[in-house]
Length: 333
Image (cartoon, rainbow, N blue to C red):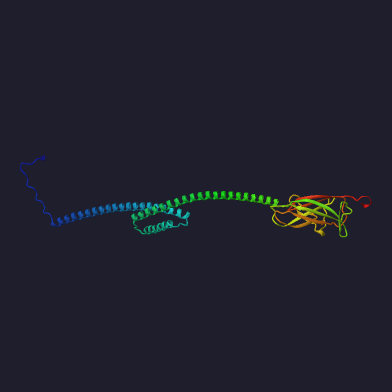
């Protein structure tokens, strides 16, 4: 007989259900609670781990941000120090207000270094101090630049003044040289103008016989030559002793020189050194004429012919004269 799934018109009574054991029920409850607690624990662990990872990531981000900020601050600080070192290196002696600003900058550097040494240093405060440091360094840099420009201008001004001074000194030297040249020229003119002049020059041949003197024109009879001349008045020549050098040139062209009678040499202005026969020292008064006369005995026979007398003063020839001595005639007349 085939069975069918359709309900029967006459239902069969169901089999009786077994009564559950209370111990099994408690076990199931405990197992369920344990599973729930285990799931909750794992859920908490997973949540806590995820939260800590987020915190670690946040801390890492903050650390990276802090390190980045520190690096940026350090870079700015290093840049400020570099500029400061460049200033103090080239300007080792800062004075006045510049020295005071450098002291303030050194104080800021110390405060910044103190903050850097702290593990949890205040970056905001450090940045503020670095900004202040940069401002002071920039201010010092600007002042030094201004002073350097001023010094450059002063250097140019000093160079201009030095050039003007040198020009003035050169002009002054030129004026001094010109004045000196004028003075020398004036002195030369005065010196030449003070040179005496001889006029009225006469030369006599004198024959001596006892106390009697007679003039002669015969060389054989002449015992001495008497030279006479006038020193003309000179308003420039100062009063005082004057040296007159007399040169006697014999007919043979040689200068008569007898050292035992005062002959010697002297320096002329135009002819170099010359031998003189006799030197006369006279006392002259400014603006007055003076007569001069002296005898020359050469201590021997005189030559026939022309004797020339040259007179020098102050290195210049001031006059000359000629005396001709004749040969004696028949019987010595």
